[in-house]
Amino acid sequence: MDLMERIQALSLANGASGAERAVREKIISMLPENTDYTVDAMGNLIVKVRGKNRAPKKVMLEAHMDEVGFIVTNVCDDGLLKFACVGGISPAVLCGKRVVFENGTVGVIGCVPVHLLDGDKKREFPAADELYIDIGASDEKEAAVLVRPGDTAVFDSPFLPLGEYKIKGKALDDRAGCAVMLELMHQENEYDFTCVFAVQEEVGCRGAGAAAAQVRPDAAIVIETTTAADLAEVDETKQVCVLGKGPAISFMDRRTVYDTELFRFALATAEEHGIPAQPKTMVAGGNDAGEIHKAQNGVKTLAVSMPCRYLHSPACVLDTRDIDACCRLVWVLTEALCRG
Image (cartoon, rainbow, N blue to C red; front, side, top):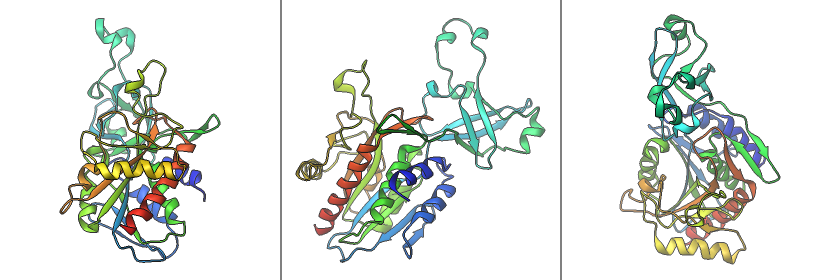
């Protein structure tokens, strides 16, 4: 199985925050033979990768397994389901989208028809609490056979190539990062390192901190995707990063001020090895680095992110050249950090 096949398989797996079991099992099935791994109490998958030599410094690579989704709050008398979002999802991407529950039940997110709305409501995106999921049930009794409060769903969306270099799919945040780690595991590595496939990033970066406390790394690389706004109507200073120009290296976001030496070292290393890379040019968002860098006595942490259009939607778009560059850069950086 090559890198793109892994990304496709992981994109099609379903696992909202707190319900990552199916994704974790899929990843375990893709591990190299005789790999040493554990699953902690939160559900993080922690994998020890054996290299040819013991590493002078302990390095942790991390990507999160969970995806944004939906959790049922009420089953209504008419068989419709009220829900809350799991993670940050814009109301703009909800109406009319197909979703699938853990048990395979399919539904559609519905709303009040536009011709029944008054005034400004016609021009506004309805909030999640104004929407419902329709699973085709006639009443509460029929719906309750299939879905109960607390059940989770995710976008139901195919994985497709898009043009010459791009791919489209749901949950590429951060299944692409998970696939990058799997790719590195299958390489011949000079040093030992640890890979963490974390849970619950989308609801507050909860799993990664617990995992880092167990691993106790000297340095960590978070492999992520990040919002790209490289669109014609967006000012260049606000485009954040651009597809096709390599992974984005963060200097600061809303959860982390990254180690300056490590940030500069990553960009210099990319240049030295002829690997495309770019700084992430906006202080926004956050990822599991926000918890990892605070673990124990502190961890030098770097975020290497693949630019992604339409993040947290059914149609995330990545550039395969950025994915390849991310693999190459993380591999080189991991060896360098292991050496210390």
